[in-house]
Length: 77
Image (cartoon, rainbow, N blue to C red; front, side, top):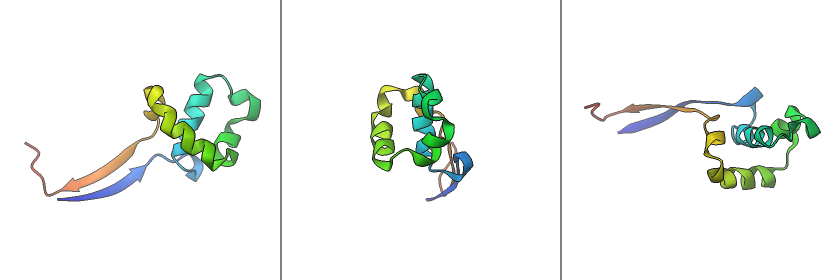
């Protein structure tokens, strides 16, 4: 079996994890405080990491990141 990552959602070329953080901040109504660009580029890496780990409490925010894989060598049946 062979698996290849074909594509990943990436806001403006940023780390896709930042999209999760942005979704959390939008749902909390906090984006107006600093703006979208802050969460996509300037938000501290350690905080991004912590929010992604904590996102299991907000599963809907994880739906904003999409990964597309190519898989070969397995049966579709």
